[in-house]
Length: 158
Image (cartoon, rainbow, N blue to C red):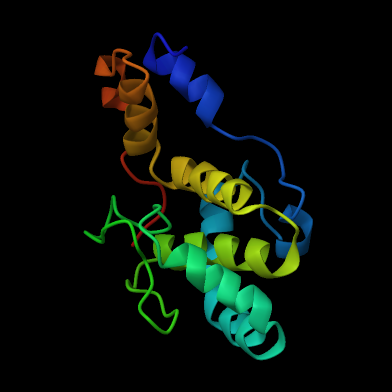
């Protein structure tokens, strides 16, 4: 029901702290700080889950290896898959491992469905790539995207 880009922004920009945010030390209200936190945890989280939670690891690998957008496709030229066959980040920027951390943590340590995990990844992706994600939402709804010119294309650095 989006009629304007403002409608899309109001619906798509998350605020507050997700229910897993306290455990991970992240908040939607601090996208740059959360980006750094999430990006820095991927390698250690990957090792931990791979060794101690094989079921969670396989769930993550099954989800993240599909072309569902768990990647930094808007900053680094990756397509919609951001991992290699071993679960390593396919990019050296901060955005990709941050998105992978969200998907991995939720796959291994929550009862979120795959759809809920993807929804959380897309919330973070909206914070990291506001212009691209809001434009996508507004255009899918048939709305006018001309007012998006002032939104940043990317939050945080590569």
